[in-house]
Image (cartoon, rainbow, N blue to C red; front, side, top):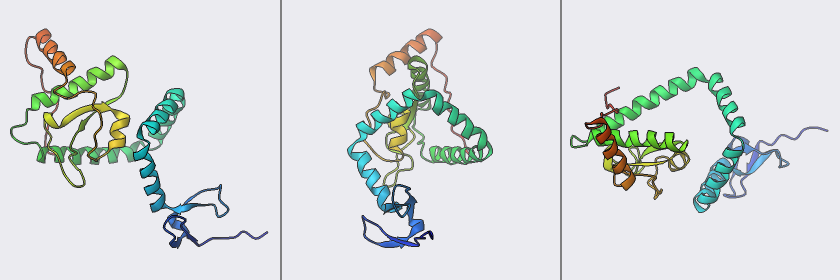
Length: 207
């Protein structure tokens, strides 16, 4: 039996006829291609995520908790396979981010307070064995608006929520901000135990 090769296909969502390269592979379909084109599929997925955020986060956390060893082994494997490539990308990303922070850090920004937010995030990670990120409430590289690199614009959220948030302006519930009571108690105790103000561990410099 001769194999049938599909060169064009109609998207079930937008109804446009497109080349097969515009569709993802889907072995469950006769054509071996997804019924929706990549663009429409992405819109469908984004709509589902926005309408079912809590459900998706719960499923992701449940899978992660029940497959920790498998996930960690796969991460190590991918890291070793792509070390040089990911290192180059990470370096470029960090350079760009430092440049953006430099440009969007006003002279009146409290650098010590910024450092304290990062310090408290590390404290939470050690205390609860969970991954937390320091996130800009109004993103530095937002699509429509760009925030400043100031303590008032920082919040501590769990890593999964931060990855979901990306560079969007959302109403993500923070774990802590500089206005959180627990944050201020921790900083006060650190000052009292060290006998001086906390040293800044965050340096902003040109790339």
